[in-house]
Image 1 (tube, helix red, strand yellow):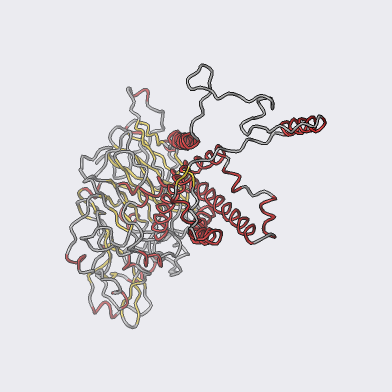
Image 2 (image 1 turned 90 degrees about the horizontal axis):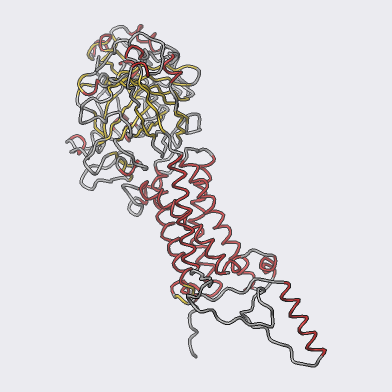
Length: 636
């Protein structure tokens, strides 16, 4: 018995189909890698660490989504131009097959599967665009759900086609063939004309004429048009449907990217007179701030924040020709200062923490705000600064959290400011750091005693705060430890802490101090320790004094009230340090909010362009109410 030949599929469908498969593979695998670092409890995905992509997953995920958008447009145009849309049309006749024969039933179910997939891809594109613009919550949940539907569709699609035609049906997508000409569009007038011709033929007992299949309603049924010659004046040439489809998809992507470019946020930093600089006191009632145009940045996909995982950051900035002044305001339901407190137990001092040794504390940690300034435009942070995965650097220690490391691959430096609600408020300084090339691991990091941070390195200088205990390796905080310093006056320290509530979702009272000043403490001694009763809580942070060196570039003041933080920061426009990025036009800024979380911060994808305006003459500068210079800060 001769074997039946495998049916063929038109080349355009094959090309579009496998392009779709490739893009979905990239989008889904990179999306699952990103999900490991999301607020969802997706750490079980680390079991697939070897097969999920590492390093610049954002660099692949977002372009894959943009290409999927263009491909979806191309597919729709191709189906319409070729008439192939009839194969997947969910009309009444096809759906009635659900109650028909096995073949008809399978065909109907297959069409339903197609439309579930099409609607899921539409859902992924819409929610992906909204996530790109900074929306989260239900949007992120729907995007996440759509990913799993796409994953489930793959085996369902294969099984359905195998049930319809076995292996030959599956192999069709590998065997290219010619595109069949689309059937002529339905024309009721042509049917009426044909019926009239049949009636006249029957009346005269003549054979009924055969309507030529190439006749369209534009030509009389009795006239068959001659084939047109190429190149004749007035002749209409029709491009191949695949070419038209690809062109339409590329045009749709061009429109999408143009809209993104036009809608990019720009933070305008106007110049003010030197004596008009705002007081750095955590109060933005100065007129200079009300006159400055704000940029609102929607950040999302972080931890906590009353379960919302996101907040809007309002940013303003001005400069006086030497210093740049920034104000950041964001909503945070609690003033969280409980940064790794130490609790006296019968077994000794215990660190109150959750996954601190894994770089993933989300309860007993302080609020933070991070600012990243890059010297040029990078759409995707992963292009230069973040590399996902358990061990993105083969010859270096792994990431303690398993989610990735910050570093650059081109030798560049990206400026990173980190304000800490406990350490920063207690010291008056923002911690100045940078992302650079991967640092050489220390012996402690190689031994697992300290967490390796890749290229995330503090700027040179002295830090104004430090931990009140020696760090231990993973799992090392299950036993008692010894504080580095103890309060001189335990009663005064208790009063400074305010009402102690170890519920991480309850904030600290106004004026509470969860740091231990070096001047109010003494080195640990057993005699002093023995006098401290069980149940005592002391701070896990020591405020040692002022910062020095490059780490003294950023002075700050912050206040929390009525569910929001207000932070003011001042820095030189150009510190002349190779570890800092100058604040100038066409630098780009990002922000991230931490709600009592160590590393699970909010994020936004689109960077904010900086535009630093300079007055030609003093009289042209914006009119501002003159304030006293910042307390303790004039220039650096």
